[in-house]
Length: 462
Image (cartoon, rainbow, N blue to C red; front, side):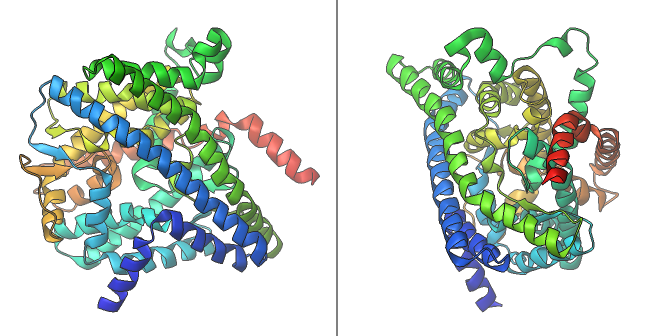
């Protein structure tokens, strides 16, 4: 067991920028793409991830202090501290079930693809931590390893189905063909945000408002472009954080840089991914006619979308305001404010980049996140103490925006014990969630009907 743990620690220690190129090189060779082509694609993917992480690092370093200044200015004093997703990942990978879950998830995924349950082959091993988090927190809640593993695998299966379902949006909204996003804590919001978009379609007046980046650029010229949106939003956050003039201007330029550089880094990443993705489709088509597969990747590849980043930056002050006014919230938003570009992905994509709807949808998402983050804090803290995490001074409990985004694990762990005060809440969540997904199950293909028809026509002509 110790040898397995050491092997897992070594692989995870490589980080996604090294681990993903290795996985993709092996994948390319298995698909018979040849060493030269596979090697070049893999290294390009690694370089792209380094670029993406550099820009995300800039975002975190610039936004973190600004968010902290806003929290201090508004005098927030809550007992649960948002410690950020890196701590959540470290705690998850440090739990006793982590070494077992990584190979189990891979084998389970292969089986589900083989029996046509899913089309997604999730190669994003680094972000298995979300699925391991679900398993480990279920283990803390139940003290039953078999039951916890079962819950983890069920959540894995649901996540893969959600990734399949949202793949047309990844292709036609984000422009990434043959890719799906199997991030459990992001894609699990898709049924909710698509349901919200369906309701918004029926609201007179509101359904006519369109503020996607293309429309803004067309109406306002340079003032509607992403670089200016980033500048204005960054300066606004600086003002709310009570920065001086130099700080306001610096933050504005930094956020403008994020909105411009992130899409370019993602484009580099995709330059390496396309040969592997096309190779996978060719390989599957030749050997299994009619079978389609998606490569499951890190949601980081889509956060650079201009509408997504604009909504994420607008949501920083809104999130802090929600922390103040929501009666059920006890979490102080802090480290994970920089992860909002991930949290709002499907809030924005559901409306095809309409920033106004994206803000409304993201606000509802954050209301749910605060509820879950608050109610899952005790289990998260217990899990942290189990692996030796030191609780920061001044914090009674730890949680996070990313931790609070795990809708599925919240439902499952609270359904296990009828004596749990949240048992009825979990039933209500599960029923509403299932009904919403059923209600919008055909909406994504309807939303992109023209693009899908054109793609299928082109496919038949080749």
